[in-house]
Image 1 (cartoon, rainbow, N blue to C red):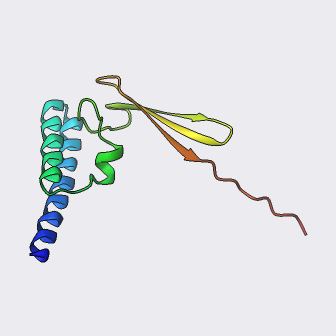
Image 2 (image 1 turned 90 degrees about the vertical axis):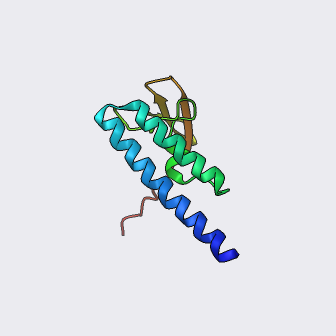
Length: 114
């Protein structure tokens, strides 16, 4: 029973990733409605398999209109700098949904000349 459940989850994950790639392809060709259907079908598969959404679905799908976010086509990406962190701001060009993702600043240590 455990092996079968794992097999179903693996299959759902693979098909969800495949559907995401098809959605990106559809958006690049200009068919946004088809891309939306692909994303919704992928999310439904993951829900039925009781799985967590993959990284692509969490970060690169609009939460409001369910369209894959492609920089320059369906999303504008900006970087805001703060004292302690950098904030990546993604805005969907179709519905106006805004996502702000904080990132830690990486400090580069300067080595002393010897």
